[in-house]
Structure formats: structure tokens, C-alpha cells
Amino acid sequence: MSNKVITDIDEVLTTTRAVRRRMDLDRPVGRAVIEECLRLAQQAPMGSNLEDWRIVAVDDPTLKRQLSELYTEIWDATVAQPLAGGEATTTARLSPSVRADPQAQARQHRVLTAVKHLVDHLAQVPVLVVLCSTKPIPQRPVGGTASGYYGSIFPFAWSFQLALRSRGLGSVLATAMAHRATRVREVLGLPDDWRPVTLVPVAYTRGLDFRPAARADLADVASWNGPTERAGSATR
Image (cartoon, rainbow, N blue to C red):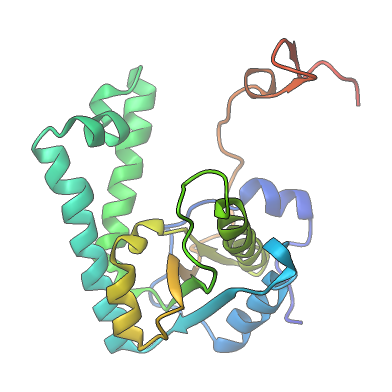
């Protein structure tokens, strides 16, 4: 195991952020540290006790450029053009202008700016990790096999991100890449049953001083024995 730069698990859990603008695009990321973090992520919970995840780490410049081109297409089709045209659903979900107050509007503007920064620089990110599933695609978004499908790949992804953070690397879940899953599979020459679910760009971070994010009071989102007995009053 390589030397970890953050050893406090609570710090890792509370400061693992979606990193885009603070990726160090000039510092190489060795294959050994990526594989080490992937091995740790293999210990994540999995649906049906089956390792149906498949992972492709990409450091080849040509392949990264092709994936970057796909990601730009997705941004234009699902964010830039709908927002410019005032499409109602996208505007309600993403536009800073519809947020409740100036602080929320500014925060959403920063998020969109950071995402666009990643879109523009994805090919320069040292390693792009494509997480795939070999489970059959769920027929329904909720219920049925959906919980096992997503309940395997995303615990893996989060464990991978935590392991990266503890070693001074940053990442983000670029789930929009699933909009071009078939083309991702073609670019990487993957078997038909390897279904790309998300992309995880990985780089060392510029600095380690990430802080816990602002979140709702626990009483607003958690309760005991139903919805009326709000959490947050228990003594430690």
C-alpha cells in the first residue's frame, strides 16, 4: 500500500468533494496508485454477491481525446442548448436564475462553471476511469432489478473516490457520459455486455484543504420511526 496523505476516516468522508477546477492537469498519475484504489473499491458491497462491475482506466491521449469529444457533445445537447433555449425541465433543474436566493444562485453558477471547465479540459485529465456493469439494464428505474444494478456500481465508485482522496487525488462522478454509453463502448472496444454507467476523471488535487460542504440540518432530512420524530436531538 502506498503512503496515505489523509489517515483520518472522518476527514476523508467529510471532505471528499466533486473535484473539477482544482485538478492538477500537469502532474502525472501513476498506474500503481489507480490500481491500488481500485483494489480497495472491490471491497464495496455488491448486489447478489456478484462482481458485475468492469473497469477500464484510460491514460492513452488519443482515447482520452475521443472520450472528451463525446463529453462535449453531451454538454451541448443536455445543458448548453436546453438552457439557451429556455427548455423548462432543464432550466428548473440547472439554471441559477430559478434558485431560491442569491446565495443559492451563486452556488449553482459556480457548479455550472466548474462543470464547463471539466468539459473543456477533460482530455488533459491524467486518467479517465470508465465504470461499467455487466448486469442486465433494469426495465424499470425503481424496483425490480434496479436496486441491485445501481447498488453495486455506485458503492464501488464511492469507495474508489474515498481511496483516491486519502492519497491526495481528486475525482468526480461524470454520470452524463452514460448518455453516450454505446459510443463509449465503441471507442474503447468493449464487449457488448460491458455497459458504461459513469466516468470518473482522476487527478492529483491542487492542495488538500477541502472542507465539509454546507448541508441541511439533520432534522430536516432524517427522522425516527416515521416522519414526525425528527433526528438531531440525541446526545452523543
